[in-house]
Image (cartoon, rainbow, N blue to C red; front, side, top):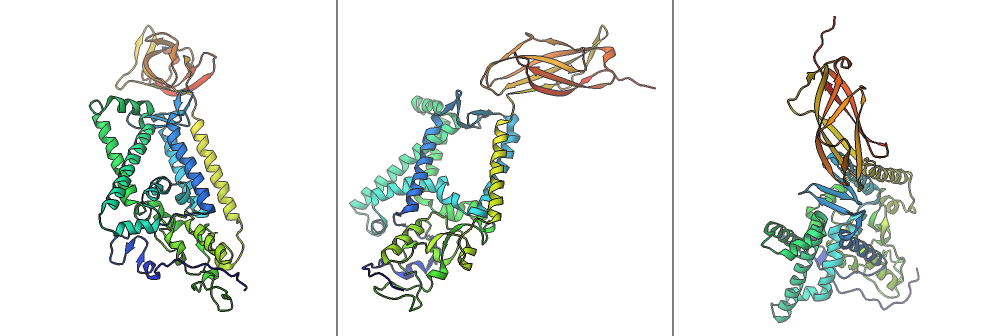
Length: 480
């Protein structure tokens, strides 16, 4: 194999540094602080674009409204939920529960085929760590070598200055992220009100925000990659979900072994040397401190930093790129080109159907919900040959439009409805209204002590908005 002449020199990185410890843990059990080198390359650029887009969504969506409703709001305190501008109520909890189950199934199936792409590209922990806090760290303390040097040196004026600036900016970013997170809970108007009115009027909310900000600071200033390697349950779960047909970031061991340092004008193939020149660049860029060449590991978040680092080295020494790449284990073992297998196609179809099903649950809820419940302990009364039952109605308008509603008993017929108020009910958008009605039937119409009854609600255009089945009670009749 003819290799172009190159003046490439592998970085002087002690090989034993990466063999005496695993990931972020020293052999002594102590934590090993990870100083990843700033990554660069094709995949890094793509990940940056995705991160910037998602960060723009995170910081922008609280201010987006659809038909006057927040785009996303999860106000657990006041039990107000909006998803894509659509209001959800406690009555819709089953939809949210089914949606959660659907999401879990989606994640599991997605992982079976596409591995931990979510971790490296979409996970909030990764996005905030790598695209916000890590970039701040690079800006203040410099790249890997400068950070390691700063960490080793005494607490002189330079170290104190840089650390205080970094920690202060980290704290500020944690407060900013917390405020925006709270906007998804109480709305941006309420957050601005809390800030303007101050601690005295909102002491509990301020304490809650301080607690969340402290948590964010702790995670991104100290815990960092250990969220992925030790805390996150998804990282543990993916170990039982992936198999040899799962797409992941893999090191092509058949092509790369045996490893040997690069020497100019050397025919590595004739000397039975692999393409891996043992430069350790795939290790120094890893944000979780692992060596991808040791095989698939739970700590790998598929961030692709090692792919870019390896491709850069391969290009410099004139060897083919892709020594580390997205692949399946079966592809590397069998030396077959990657193909979209029938299993992957079937799983992709199922994932698409799950997304469609979840969307159907979100939007096929109806614009009105009506319930007619007999008060606890109530019964019927008879007067002038007529039987009367009292019902408490609850009407929920799930739309943004005001509705004028009419209540009618469909079966049995010949019912009389007495309202404790106007016959026509005006219900504003996203409003819940409760009231009482008396429903009366001629005694001869009621054949059973508990008669099935259907009540329907109609809008001003005569369209039925909801229907409710209940029981109308009458006197017990003994038949012979």
